[in-house]
Image 1 (cartoon, helix red, strand yellow):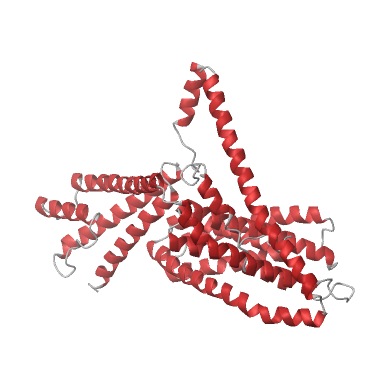
Image 2 (cartoon, helix red, strand yellow):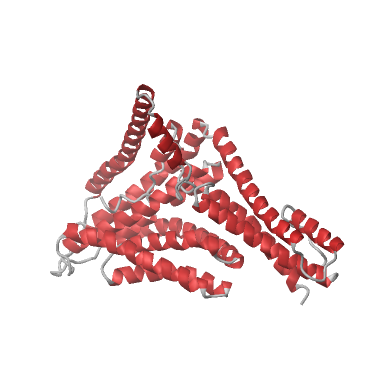
Length: 447
């Protein structure tokens, strides 16, 4: 069960990107893959330790799982916050990027060294470092963005190559173990059917439960007379949104979206890697029971889910018409809100500049710099010539860097207060990073 439990989001995300799947569904698929993989692999490790009779400092499997589930994330938190602390004392984008690349390995090895869940440690460390990346330098963010994109492409290619390369070894193992191919085939089909059926059942049960709960809440709110004092208190509480409000999309899934989520349970390299990780022998020296059969079943389930679900998913997405104008309008509004926040921060810095300009600049120069920076916040090509007007250029550069810093600080502050979505903030920060990179390149051309 633990071997075939974790879904592989690589195929679903690849198809979703190609067909324009809503971003919220993409986030659900990638997020559930992280959590499910961590939980399933932790259970798998505990089950293997019990079957193979390997030594464990906690003999009770439930206690061992609880220890792994608690200590692993704690290790991830320590590694993540230590990484952010080190980054605050570094001023080298290359070192910060390399450090970010090493974090998953450090978290995994550190957690496994104390017999806890390395996968959970990696997930939590990634969350911590990712949330703190908004406060890193623009060069670090740009470098990490392209680095991890390249790593994603390599891992996606490795996943499908690994699946294909495993077939020959699985067949050889079955022949060596003299397993009945008919029995293996029937067992594989049975497990495949269960895997294909159980996810839609669970998804639609949760969808139905959520729909019923919303209807009950609506009925209760209509039937219950309003209490003025309670309404006033609740209104006061709503004035300050939760800091997580901008990071959590509370909109309910439609039945079309739930259908796609239910049908994106493809298994992949995690299932095959877990099956291949079964030890060949147990503690007494005997062969691990039914090892080759388990690996073969895992392979059939992986190929079956990819062959059935991945091939029909594009047709399903097209038939369900997931094009959501309301979501597109919401995303557009979030983008405009990010621009509004950045413009407001820019206006504040420019007002301070006009009120107290640097010494040595006349009123005309101040007006030119002010207008140029104001336009620059919207047009990255509007730059002063770095070879001319050195004093004006220096004032422009300082002012524009102050504007960028104020815009970033305002965006992050509003994100933390739950006033704007995290994704819109990251998109706006990418624009600001590219603008600062363009400015830095022109500054370097003066040297």
